[in-house]
Image (cartoon, rainbow, N blue to C red; front, top):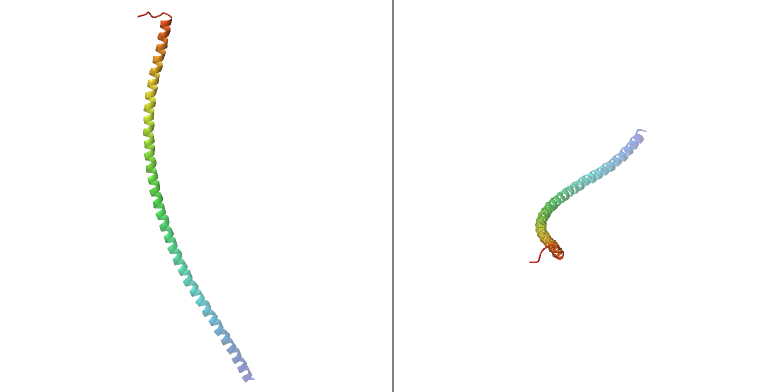
Length: 127
């Protein structure tokens, strides 16, 4: 009976060792997969850092370019506003001059009409 128990125990231990070996192989496979996954994550992280750095540099260049464009546009608009101000001043002076001439003509016309009425009604003698 002890031989049968020993052989049964041997079989059980053999099966247990086989299952233990398979389990160790599976654990090794899982460990290998995890290490490969870690490497893949590290590569992806490095790529993302590189992409973020490139993106930040691109944003900085675009920002600098926009600041330059805004400054150039501001200078151009300032120049155009100054030019328009000068043109407005010139037009204002011309308008003032035209109004002065028109007033002079209007006053002369009124005086001529009044003089004509005075002569017509005999208020002024003949020279």
